[in-house]
Image (tube, rainbow, N blue to C red):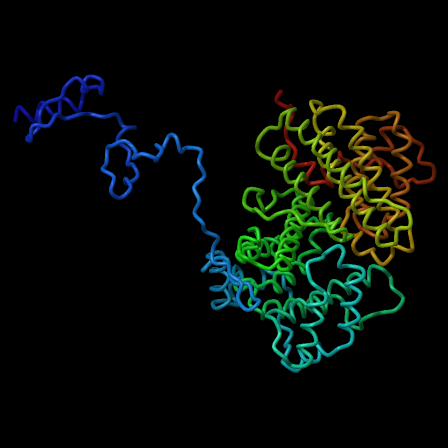
Length: 548
């Protein structure tokens, strides 16, 4: 009893006092008391090596190996088999709720979510029988639309091999075995081409089927092909083309479903990993990289448009940069990639949860200037075709967008570097100039649908906000002329948001005491308005001062 009482007394004492006592136990060995940190579970020693001993010759201690990379030699379950790409994971829990909801959907349950809803499908059940699919495949309208896509859309979305698509189409027409999801990607191409034809105001209709019908057909065939629970390269490409309209900015009630599911389906297929890790052919690796980088570009553009964090974090992918090979569409995609990477970095360092520093802004400014200089330096040369001129213009606009997104917070906080004002204004003016060229040049009309993926309202609103906060500046007359040109070209015609932007212009004109003449509709509206009412990214910037 006395011995037990003394043990409990020791436990209650301070560790430093306990360390003074080393009584012998029943077998004659001394009892040693270690601190808490020293009693943590350690890794089992290598086989054949006794515990509590020094490392064997040639081995290093854990402290010495602290910075050494541990190689798992594990790339997932992705394999190439008969030209098909299998799933990256053996199972993916993210689609479990989708599959369960498809089997247990109740029409009376208002909270039921199906994969159809996640895909953004309004009416996926069109009753396409095998005869209907055969009629769709045999239609000569398909050939005309794919040809249009190849000529006027492929440089913007080079996610498919048009020759392979035509081969799949011929196999379907000859009732031969085709690759999985072939009908889905063919119909999605027709949908994109149909939208492009409509935007170009082409005098000769290529299809009697409206764009909405092509989209519904593509959506049903995509769903019938097992997407997203069983994705393959064709269904990923089809889903990308159906989700691409979300890249267009200015949508105030976006549907994030198609893009979120697309990113997850692409990752479950292993597209976020470097394709050469899986012993794919050089041709397959190139197509895989192009598809992944296109999806990343879609994710970044969507994040900018709606002030949402990008879904894809740069540390979760190791896909290499694409090789341009002097191809015009590859050069444009590389510009989109490089500017998108810097915009993503801007999101994390400037618009993220961590308060930015002047060093962050300076570093991003230097990187953006470097990217802009390198990407624009080879974008012009004499004797350019209409496509080459449009691509050069698009590359410049991508760089301008990168610059004014980085520098526009000068309007939000007086602590922002003052040099950002001129850089942002110059980028907005160059961007608007390129957009106006794309609209007014008749030779570029076939590319009007691609131009719609850019947003001229954002830079125009930045100029108006500057006129409000810097009335009577040296640049005010130039900015006024640019704004008036934008409104006379686009107002109430190409985009309904121009009518809403009229309120911001009214405030800018009043701030500068400009005579609006007979335009009595420009009276200052009730209530305050600012760039934040039109630009959610600008509204999300909350820092009042920077750290040194």
